[in-house]
Image (cartoon, rainbow, N blue to C red; front, side):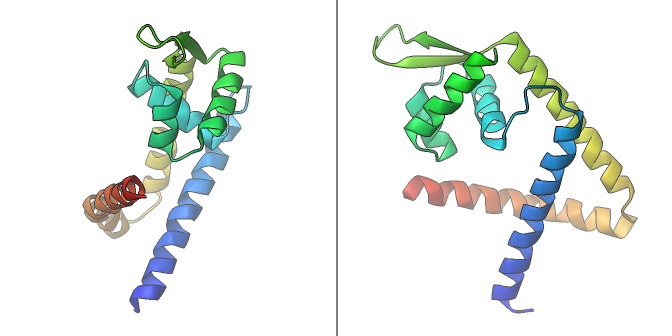
Length: 151
């Protein structure tokens, strides 16, 4: 198999898996419906409470105004609190609410259950192949992250 074909096949498969997981997870989610970027921002803020808007934008590879729009929506929905940074009154710190943490916990549990169900449908050989591929997929993600840092 040519490397170009492999690269395209892998990219297509990864996108399909991600898209289908998002669709399945939306079914069990309560309102409001969160978009992928909103979930990513919430996950980041839960992992790094107090992160600023510009740092969040850099981490998510989004424009600052896009993150500000997401923050405003998530704050309106009761998932984020925007506080003035004590050291710089012009900057804001983002903090998750209990509702955000509960929503992400639920999302994570449903995602794990979804993947567990789908893995159970595969034969042992396919499950082993996926498990063997995890280190390479993690390295691929790390390389993509590093390349994003360079630009």
